[in-house]
Image 1: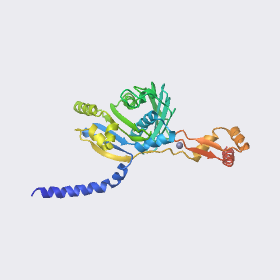
Image 2: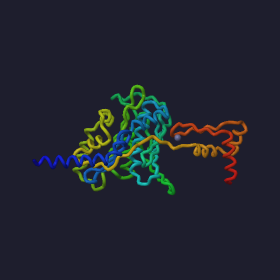
Image 3: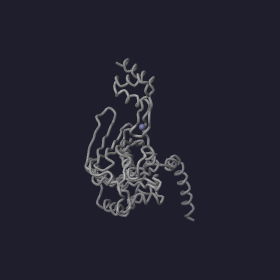
Image 4: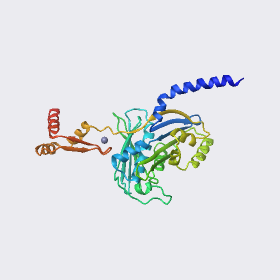
Length: 323
Ligand SMILES: [Zn+2]
């Protein structure tokens, strides 16, 4: 009869898990990121699924498939990196500059799971790789990856590394190894469908803490060797938690948190007005004289903000009073 108490215990544990997981289940239903640790804290790990985030960037910038993949990978890398920050208003910006046809990509993320980004050239066509995959490395080319950490009230901190392959995941792993001296594995994948929409997108970052022992490193390397494609896992229905359980198999993965992720710009009329003021008084007076409406297009989200001649007059007056 010893099965009875254990079944009873099971029911209670299950109910408790349900109460705790109610909000979590809502978060996990859409694009989200998870964070956890493994091997008694010797490994820390992040993973996300972000189909909607990458699709939003694709819609905002009308990107060709290879640019959707490149920008999507960088945005997902930024989301996971941003989640390592502790200050809510700290921003992380990754800038990739390459000699390939995309030329450049700029993405910004915070620790709240919000990201935005734009490519230098959204309409790039390069032949697929021999394995049929989008040639992100070829579209990005050789160049640099810069990271800028920006906390209000402090000087921005920036560091830069050479690109390893332009495939983004390897470049980010190299960045963490060189800039932060943290051995890191990064997997990122964006699968673009025939209609150019994003079928799935996701990735993971796994980092070894300084006290990590050889056995853990060896097990992790074995696991990583068996995970050839993040998109294959996602397409088969894997959640970010499933991805980390696979990557950290046998290392006692413990999940700490799940959070929603989204493509979010935050540009508004006030910022557009500030940008317009930067044109200078003469230019503004000229536009008012010609009864022209100023149009400000946001690089990050493609949204257009319009300032009427009346609003421009207000701005000039406000500026004059401000002085
Ligand atoms: Zn915007």
